[in-house]
Image (cartoon, one colour):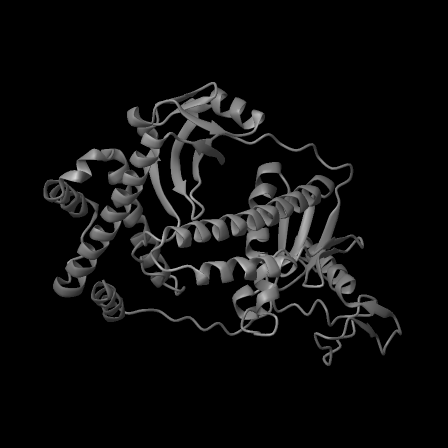
Length: 407
């Protein structure tokens, strides 16, 4: 199983210069090859593969001599990444999903480049040797991760160098090694969890996990930093300093939120064997402009991603209930469906059996019961109309031509 370990780098001035050149060269190759492939297909209907793109990379090295200063394996990996992006694009078209045509990379966003395994020389003590020009670069990570890296460095698959907007450098190392299994919970427990805005999670056991409201609780500080940035003259060094200061604060808030998500997932998985969760349509929920900011702040998709891959690591099970299942509207006692329930109703009384329901707790209990039915094979999926839009070859060509015209 693949596991990534993210470490923070502390490079010297010369190493910073080289890494910036490496990131810029990788971005340049990606953009040039994307333009080349779009022109070939849009104008000549020629769908170039990795062999033709590799030849174009060689011609670019002859035309731009400064590309020879960067590691050749990293530049070749940019071409491989582009081919993978095209493969994902065509797979989405074939499956009727949103295509997601490859886009040009901007130097103003987070920068990254990938190192294949043969471009990493090794890890020793408190030093990491990536390539010759980045030999003995200092880094910082936890003691357990450091031992893990030194022990299993022969199983490294690849690594990614990243420079954030705040100017920090990170190196994510991908290792093909089974993760240590968690001890099984005391009982074979199954719980349902309801995700919401008032409380981040309400479980069927009655446990509530608070919503940090990480950005709303710090909105005054964020607004102050944005005002400071807007007052600085464009192109000045003070504006660059303010921009980095703002990026560092956002990075700090995101790290707090990410830590909280991991801690909640770890607690859920350590106490339960099976977790039942709703298959929420987050994109559709964001169309509600009154709640869009609150929903976006929750990072629901990020939470589900962490829950799923950690459950796979630790031998736990995650069951998803259909998004069309009316978890909040069903009475947990008699099964009555309250069709008139609205978002503002936090409690409601069942007219059939008279039970007073807490909206979120009732939803979590209904999700748990539906998860039990799914596990036993008793629940049948509801048929819902799905509108799938597919692109014909003419539509694909139009996207490519438009991509070229913009750049």
